[in-house]
Image (cartoon, rainbow, N blue to C red; front, side, top):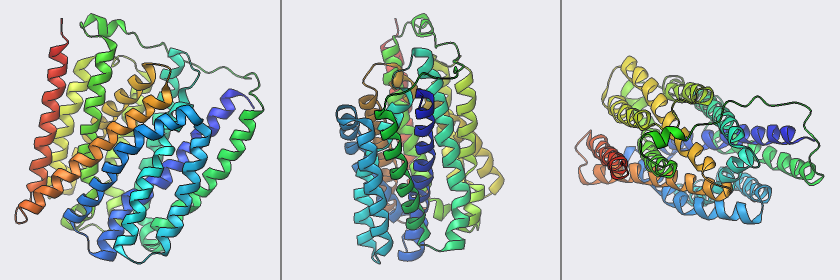
Length: 395
């Protein structure tokens, strides 16, 4: 099996992992809302717990993958995730489900840093650009599909599908990983085809602005958590957004997955066009669009405005995420560890946004928009930090 064939296998794992993880995480909030009566505040605290575990686990699991083997990390991750889904499906208490979710939040990180590293391991700079772009388009397409169809699965097969569908997918991933590991152990055969690689990014763009590439990595690592501050706050309150707009879980899947398709469109463009590399203006514009679209989605009572705002949210979050992952993979040889750091910063955002929103609703329970304005203020702090980093390193 050639290296290209192996990497297609890793992308297949990425698709399955995204489908399983996205369906479970996104529709767990609907499960908690419908089965145990969780409102916005409760779901935000659940998301914050996920982020708190995620941020610690990501860095450590990334280092484990780099030192103990990327495929070994995947085997541990997929096997454990499948087992956890089966256990959660047999439980009938909120406390039990949340305990399983906490362990899930840790174990999941045996998968993402390893998959990110396998995608770009052993590539030239041009190959890193090509592979990271392909990886981003692959997982974002699967994520959009999972959210779009998830509401229909939830209504057609019942609440338990939140656990049983991911359990089946994680089990398939485990089998595929063992097969790929056996093929990789035999040694790759020479590739029978060439991969078209776009022109590698020009770091002269960074030098032309008086900023080292390493600074762009820091700015992207700062911006990406704040992107997830907005995104995971939105995901946690989607059942409430659906109630406000009069949408069923199926309709939420249809109308509130627009931003994920927008993110996919951004990834496709950014993959093929390199003009954004090491240019601060694009990162700044994306951050401003992120804040504006976040506020509009949570404040609007008209579905067309929510849909329009999601287009900008998807484009903005796509550029911010792509910047973080690309610069992480472009910055050195320890890709598993860098992938873990990339995921750890995501975890910081997953925790901070929902935690701030939940705290606001706890302290101001009678203010309908307390969480919206609190999280928006947090995003404004992130914007200030991004500008400060740029000015601090200006010549």
